[in-house]
Image (cartoon, rainbow, N blue to C red; front, side, top):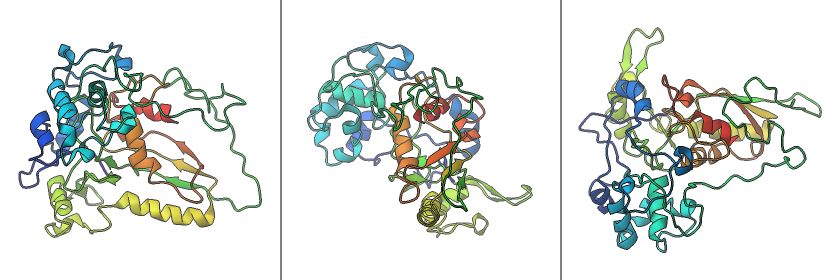
Length: 362
């Protein structure tokens, strides 16, 4: 499984999203949060850090780059717009520009750059307010995808088609029965505790990157190395820092108690998805039961409160990297997932991460 933490071991430096000597880090002074596993469990969901949310979510109006609310991001935005976009690593740093502003980063306006740093700030220096002008308004909406769901034109007000006004409006309501026709036996797949970390996400709200070890910044799900205990939970076999050593060395510097197997423990979600895809092509499941813990370590990496008729760019990015691009293929494409939220999806003990965005996404 995967999660969201950094090693505090000085010999295993957590990646900050960009190389330590890169120009963008010098400009943006990206923060590397070194967080032990137990500290993260206690404190990660309280990382409000005084940062601003999406303009529509928090009622903020657009503001110029000179406004005090944008003092943190203004220097790096101006640098990126003028010369930073020509850096050899710019294509990697500014890969989200097309999705957010609908323009190429090489031709983006200053307003487009402000929007990028408002929605998904490379290096962590988030703008506190969206721009007033940009190439493709609205300038305060980070993701405008979605559209009408298939089959909803006939009954647009059904709970399968109409988004609830609040996250819990449909609580306790019955979904339409799923009818299975033909001659059995019929197959249903069940899966749970499958979520990974999105290491390519540029987090907002002052949150750390979802990277626990070198290599965790690559596209797709990465793993959170959790402390391992014996079956009775009376003996610690491998702690978080020891597991970080395993992942950082491809198993070469790994205590035996960790039980790390290179090629398996470093890509468990991919291996399960591959098996699921192969099985689905033969058995063609009618639907999938999903019992939760969809995104590690703490669900959708933003505070709850986004309007239910909107998707944050953070939500869009995590779903693409951890779900849409993973569970697909013949027998799975177009199949209904009946899902619940696990404790990690709620954000842990504080329940203030973007759990409502998982409901809005469906």
